[in-house]
Image 1 (cartoon, helix red, strand yellow):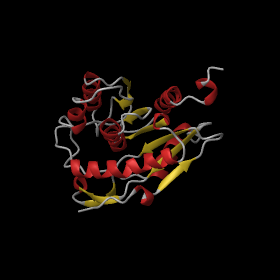
Image 2 (cartoon, rainbow, N blue to C red):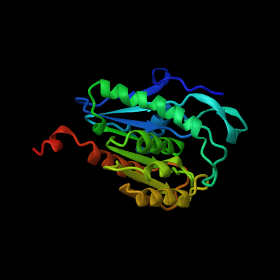
Image 3 (spheres, helix red, strand yellow):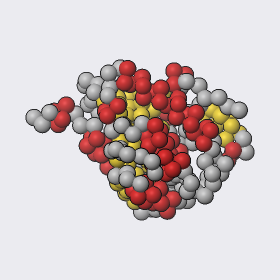
Image 4 (cartoon, rainbow, N blue to C red):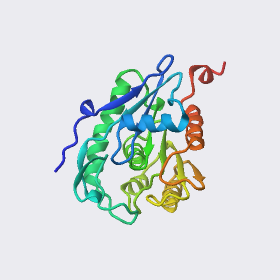
Length: 239
């Protein structure tokens, strides 16, 4: 059985803010990728790094573990799946272990003086799914959640936990390519609808002709949304 390391042992790529650090964003990559690879992919799509004046971006790398869809081969994944399908049970044991690890990453930011309400979590594909579990089951006081080309299984523990929730929930920003053949667009839509029915405020953008990938318009919309959730000091002080 693979044992997840603590957050202190997670490799990570960090993009520092250009000015004073007042907010943080944790961006989780998809299966088999890396934090550095995610940063470079975004940079290639935008033709520049994703950067902010006041927001630190943390791109952690998932630890290597056996991955069932690869017949047990080792891969950098946040958790295991029995298969890539929305009607499969979740591998909740591995999801919950990684929630503990990523909680340490959030707590590190809080120790550095960043309030939880100034922290965003999200990711691409499996990373987005991981972020949804992390936020809606463990950290409902973060600033927001984003999930790009992601989905939850039909019987997800997230849905069950939210049935017993009260208080304000972080907003969810989702994007999905209509032409995605790995994670179907309908899976993303169903995830969005289910979360909305459970009290989550959601934004969902569909992109024609986009496969299981990122594009510039999607990332520009994400960046604008991030700034609405983590405004700079001037905006927040209404000057």
